[in-house]
Length: 116
Length: 114
Image 1: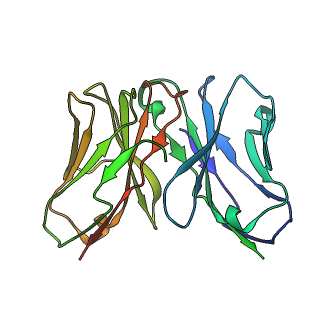
Image 2: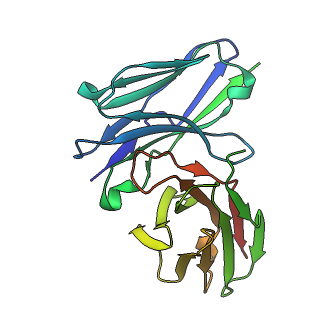
Image 3: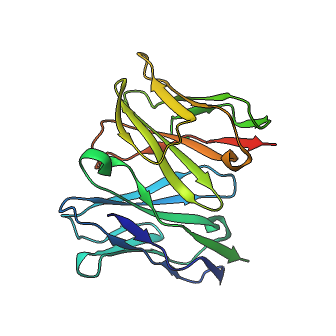
């Protein structure tokens, strides 16, 4: 069965601190996809990144970076120099490629509070 | 703005009633997914449609049903509502039905059952 674990329920930091959100996944699929979504206080789910299982290259987008390690089944998300606008709940999700695995399996989310 | 629209934004109703939630996918997307977000269960997949056909089903209650119409919009019908059905219901769409296609989410419909 597929599973996503986000062990950190809540994180609180002061503006300009770096923060890493952890995500550990379980799957028996050889091809799978990992995602991060952001849910700000307004409630919508905003797509941040998708990573394919066969591409372990890390990615940086502005202040955001993602570290994908198949050996530890982890897909961690780092925000550098955090800002108040980064305050949100962040979800890690996993999907397979066939059958019922096409759906997104979600972690429980990490609530990030960035204080001024 | 993801390009996925959902109506209504908020819905307040009573136990035992029936409601219909509506979703229009992004232009060009053929696949529609429905998810439920509640405080106790988190985000749960309900059902997926691709080009009008049901493709995958999650833990969707028998009281719930959905369909995707020829114009690709989708509706989620919830009947015999219970207090526990109060939740945020999201629709998402993707280009195709394989897992590598990113799902883009609508703003959600917040359902309150009193």
